Image 1 (cartoon, rainbow, N blue to C red):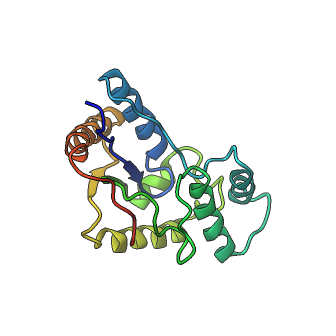
Image 2 (cartoon, one colour):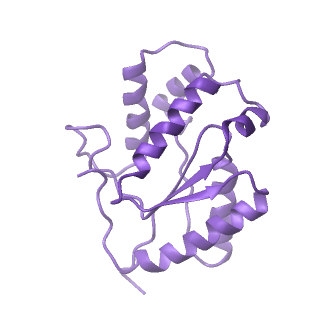
Length: 181
């Protein structure tokens, strides 16, 4: 049907919770089911800002914390069509139809391969990140769904796919909102 829009689905979680793996699997499954789907990852490390962020995350360069936050936002804006970010960096970005939070205990995160290679892969920092996610989830204007990321990759994928297919149908019937307007 012409004029229908897709759904914006975001996967969130602490580092090494499985966001990249589950995002790739979801896009592949949606495409196989006939839904046009596109994967956007942040940071998008191929852009100039993304290269700065990659260098910073890999502990190859130093950037002040406030500036890094703005660079992450600028990296998302590099992939967006809107220019209304003068009040706050993320105000005006498309509001997700669904945010899937891949919940994983920090003890399990530390056990996953490669943990500690990037700057923020530190237990204390990730605990603070986790608490911030819980605060964000209190915003009832955003559709958050929590998925247990300690399950098998396939079980996590099935749950995310079910949530995504349900939201795709609902999203087609309403306009895309704006984040934190």
